[in-house]
Length: 40
Image (cartoon, rainbow, N blue to C red; front, side):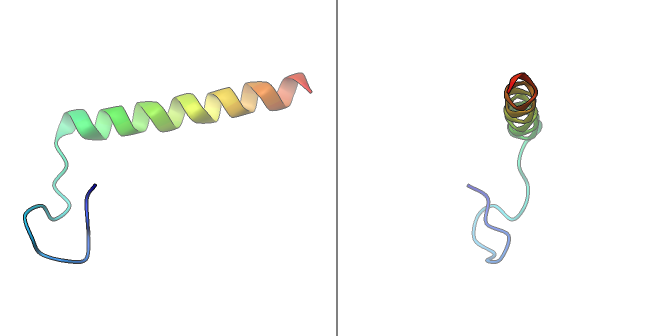
């Protein structure tokens, strides 16, 4: 995980692959939830 408060090893410097994966997971989850709400 990335910690924004303390200055240890990593301060808010996620690499590109981590950011893209995180965005993709969030987008997939939102799409899944939205599709299930429309069907009900």
